[in-house]
Image (cartoon, rainbow, N blue to C red; front, side, top):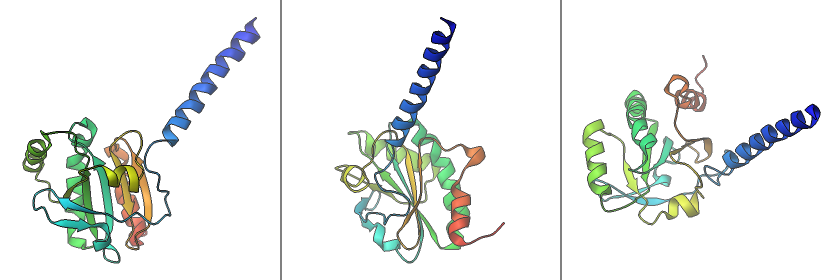
Length: 182
């Protein structure tokens, strides 16, 4: 009887681990690290001007954050992204594109408030019909999703969910892409 209980307990734990890993693997984008990042053109929130990912090819490393105003984690990450932007803007080889996944009529007001509150210096582009997120990047599961694309347009990094500021990987990825050795 004890062996059966131990066996069943172990099976429950293994099943939970398998299901968690399968669920985690199904989240994020459908684009693999090492693949060419799908190009897109979206309207910038404040100016209405078109911004294309391809505008940065050959010039800049691009961090894309897929986010929404209703997402508390997304809002908590704004200061971290602002810091990354400010720390890297003078290097001239880095850009952040915050891809807004619209969720309602209050988005315009909420985004405007967030821009003012956090002094967001990077472009916020609006995926009005969510086609960039769902069709081009095949987003599934949780947000925020951060991807980093190198100057050649190749996806080099993906992170789903909240970044831990104590072990924030963005600087490490940027250093690697710039060829900076420790």
